[in-house]
Image (cartoon, helix red, strand yellow):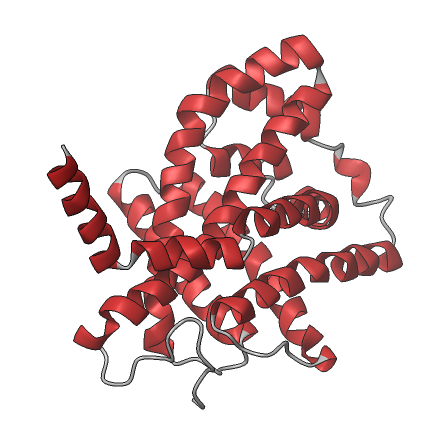
Length: 275
């Protein structure tokens, strides 16, 4: 037994998994995931509700987007739609200034993602005038989510799966490069984008099995609050995957990247090299 434990420990250290776990603690991964979930629910959700209500194609509104992302179906999807979907008149009662305010309040979410990526790559915080990058990222995120819903209605089977995988990897690949201001090479960011998308797929599968019955039970026991708590729990998982995927990509380059790239970035815990 001791020999097997030593073998496992040596394998753990050889893979460098202890470094990944330590960096996750240093990055305060769970704390950042909680912050992401709060910002997404308070700032991003109202903006997406207005965008979904203004959808000229009428694809079901924000609740449909959310149910698709969580992998919900049947009664749980209907409950979520009934509780969260706003009346279509929300567009008529939202002024131009109100829409701009929603967009401005959504920008801090992009700032939170940017700060997390900077910590992952040991980069100094970006200047305040880079807020335009956060706003642009928010717009592209909205377009990406809308495209996912369109693909759900227009395609089925392998074609839809392939499109979702490709666009997801491209979005998270571009998102890291854009929010970091081009300070990290494209090929260094690709593993993190792939890891993020793989994590989101796994989270969606987990959600479809676990959260689908929980939404029904919580709706019966606690009403609207119970459903919102489930959505918030799912958003925490999304935040964990987004930051954890980027961190995993950085770790993969640090410990195994020399096999695939000529000039890997500075190792975690050291000063970043000029790019």
